[in-house]
Structure formats: structure tokens, C-alpha cells
Image (cartoon, rainbow, N blue to C red):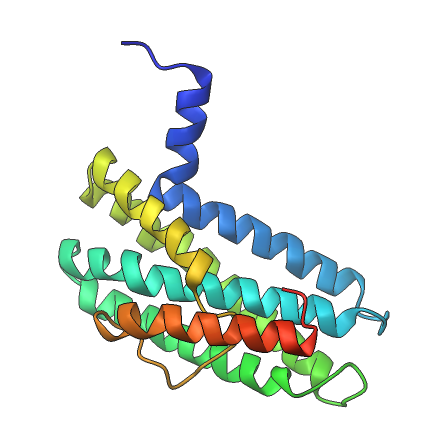
Length: 194
């Protein structure tokens, strides 16, 4: 049975590597906006908070569903994923430091630039090395299944950095949605628009 254009869009949007790449493009757009507005303090903290929330949601979802597949399917999966998780941990430490700062703080812009450079470096590495290998290691049905899981997990994922939270299943699968719920309450009470 032939696929319609709508079916192709659905398939493309929920395939694991396409989901991750779409997030990367959104991050790049946020980073460009951060760079373009570096001299505009009004709204700067909100934009940084939004970028952090999006990054945290993405990291939580891929740690829950993409990294276990990489560990299982790639011969060097443990080493690859451990390196990715170490990168996430470093980025979360930077984000945690940013959480209590604003544009008037002398280290704010330096930390924003460090976070952006770090995430860009990791995105490029992931796109060049990890994603193509996952595409080869998994069939289309699996890629769809895990892409859908990543999309769903982002809906309940934390929105704030938690550098000491578990980053491996099953602990992150159990605790992540609860922490996400608490983060959303904190966001609403503080007026943080993420």
C-alpha cells in the first residue's frame, strides 16, 4: 500500500534520529537567539531559562530511551554512552550555576557562552558518530518506537538541572517524571515561563 505525504511526515517526525536532529535544530535556533541578544538584558534570563529547560528535557528523554539502545546495540555502546552522560553532567553543572544568576551577574554571559559551546560540540559529535550508528543498528520499526518514546518522555521530563539525579534506567525512568512534575510546579510558582 503506498504511503501518503502525511504518512511520510509522521514517520519522519517520530523516527528516533529525526527526533534528536529536530531537537538539535531547535537548540541551534535558541543559541543563535542567545547570541543575537547578548547585549539586551531585558528578557535575557527568561530566554536562558527556556534554553535550559529544553536542553534538560531532551537530555532526560535520550538518557531514558536512546542511550539504553546504544548500550545494547553498539559494540562500544557502554563507552559511547558513558562519554555522552559525562557531557550531560558537565552541561548540567553549568546550567545549575546559571539557575541562580541573572544578566547583571559578572559570570552570567561567560557561563551562557560555555554552555552553548559545550552543547554545540556534543551535538556535532552525536550527529557525526552516534546517530548514524544507531540508524544502522536498528530497524525502522525500532527507530519509530524509540523516537515516539523520546517524544513522550520529554512531556514529563524535568525542566531544571539536577546534576546528581540518576542518569540510567531504571532509576531515571522512575524518578524522572516525578522530578519533572515538581519542576513544573516550581516553574509555575516562580513565574518561570518554559
